[in-house]
Length: 87
Image 1: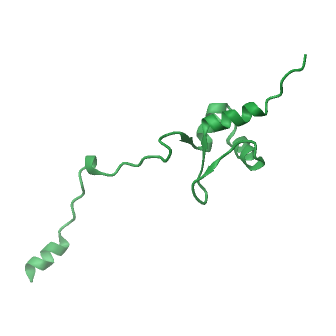
Image 2 (image 1 turned 60 degrees about the vertical axis):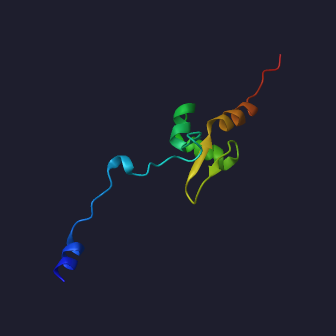
Image 3 (image 1 turned 180 degrees about the vertical axis):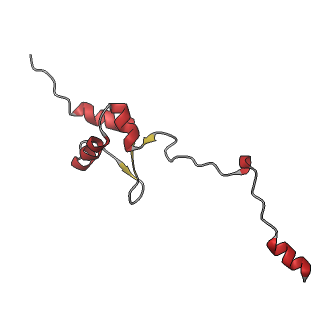
């Protein structure tokens, strides 16, 4: 009986840090957050959200509140909207 109580009260040892699971972002780093896209483009985060809601740039919805962007897709969408000079 005593050995059972001792086993129940002994603290559980944690795995060594190198055995922990490592979190990998989906998309192998190709998907960027709103903050990262805003920093890349030199715009405010609110501007990025407005552009996505207006349909100007595409976003990838990963969950209820998780939205990511592909930088190449965003740049291509913005290039399509550039106005060319008429000479």
